[in-house]
Length: 112
Length: 109
Image: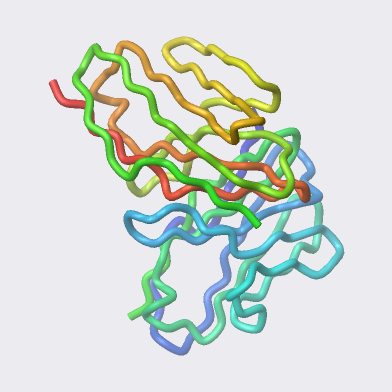
């Protein structure tokens, strides 16, 4: 099956700093990528849909100025958490769509 | 909008059969997916239904009734490694995937 990678797999940052998470489709081109957030013992919550070459579509309640998404190529989408706060600590997962969605391994963000 | 409901927790015995139900309401439908997720890991794909009926894949089967907005995941010959969360997800009209809250399954010896 198709492979999606994420980098970094985990990151610790200080409150107020920004963190960039990369999502890559390794062996296929993905015109659409999705970003999810998952808090402990909860399900995946869709944050935004990222389309190559256009602006991302954000879900209700997700601040687009705080969670910057860039989908510059068919194999790479990035999520930047700006001015991170402890409540942004979560598991961030991307997926890339081909005939089905393929998930990356996730990035665990801890904001201290 | 969408609404996806599944039980929060279930417990079953090793070697037994367990059925995890999912009911949904959605304005657009392009398929229903079941994923398995172990703690701290990304979800892994189990099954996909877009037409009514039963799809069987080894120890796992998934059923869909679009008219009833209902699906179930059937796990046979349960193994300890099947202890995980099972997520029901709907692919909507825009091909976006939305997940239910997940069912945490515990398999006991």
